[in-house]
Length: 411
Image (cartoon, rainbow, N blue to C red; front, top):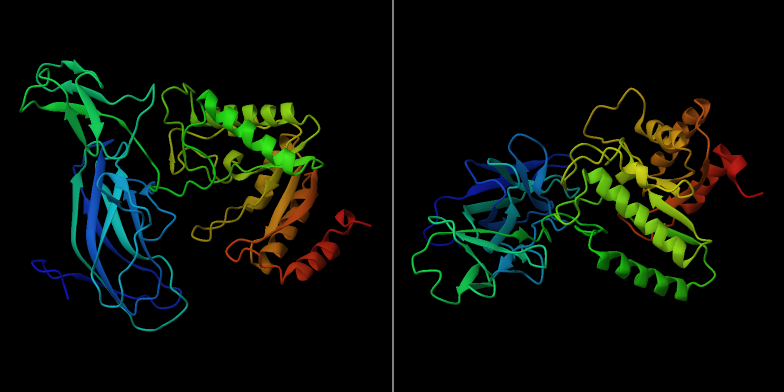
């Protein structure tokens, strides 16, 4: 049953195989760098395609909200929910909330739909109703020594102090004394958690406080104790989608932030274990992939991040072509291999990714890159992705490598 009082709902028919479908609503004249909460009701009937929420800036393709979980992660009583949003049972209406920040943008596009089909052509439908948006004050604040909640009077400019004049509560302030009169209009600013707004795969939003590297050292020392004879360590910096917002960092760019973090990480591991050989994914340092001018919720350009890679650190290269754009004149794999070759860095190719033809694509591009003078590609890594633990193709991939790159095969 549709919730009482709602206007007629919008219907989204399940897409056929290899199709996409989504409902769109544009919101205009929002305040930049402001927290908003969008909400809607949803009901599905035999809709098996994976439904997803995405919020995009009006003038760019930069996502303001793109959760790892399809329908995002809502909040209640000022805190993130314990679990991500989920659909109700067949024919059951379910309320969904989405918290995001507009960043520098004033107009946004809110999408709900299926970016891919669940490999079936069955009829199905999703109904979306009562979509609303409202500004939320003090949503998910981050408070530490250099990230204060700022409160001042809109009329007089008087600055108030946390702990003396107010304390921070769930999306509100507790007023402590008469210095803030009843009915005052206040201007409040704070730093907002980006948790659950973006897939933050492996790395933190702030690596500048000294505690960060101390925690990393403690973690690495524990790993070394578990594997005392191992002389290889993989620094898992990839798809780092939120960084360089902490004002204490004071880096000139996101590239300098990442380069500085990478430099510190390599130095710390080498200090603990001088003989260790280090590896790192290519994508966050590679202008052919994610080291670009604007990347997700990164504050500033990542061009030049590769300056932080130590000459002896090995690049694990997983470059793939974007299937949604026309292929470049020179395949990205070749351009990527050459980029790190020109920096005199050794490389390992991370191929397969649940796709046997991708292995052939990589081997073809390796041949072309080496014909163009690329050296230093010393091996391959069998890499699974969606089906982690999928090893039934291991023999086939090994046979391809042995046939195509015999010189690298152990004799």
